[in-house]
Image 1 (tube, helix red, strand yellow):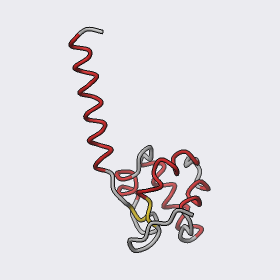
Image 2 (tube, rainbow, N blue to C red):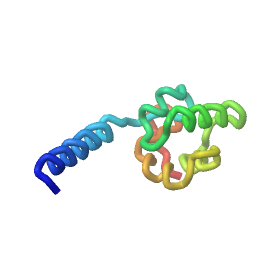
Image 3 (cartoon, one colour):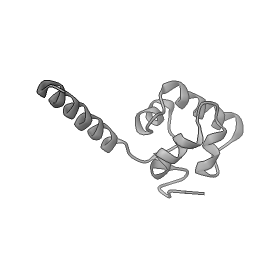
Image 4 (spheres, helix red, strand yellow):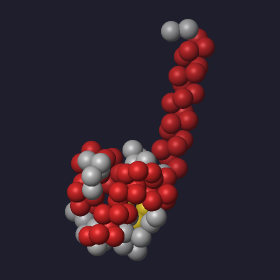
Length: 95
């Protein structure tokens, strides 16, 4: 690897780390799609819209694991984001 490529790769890794550090807890039972997509890693706007639509059709999520029932949200996405998913006013739920 050339020196410039190494510097570029290191810069990309630092930026990715900064973006991940910005993500914070989000209440998936009250947040809009834009907020959900901004705060959860691996959840773009289409998946966030699916979360909101699922919530509207089925009621609030009772556990973090219930998010895996949303089309496009797998167990891996739930695990990656578990610490940043809120279900009620400030209390983080893991099961």
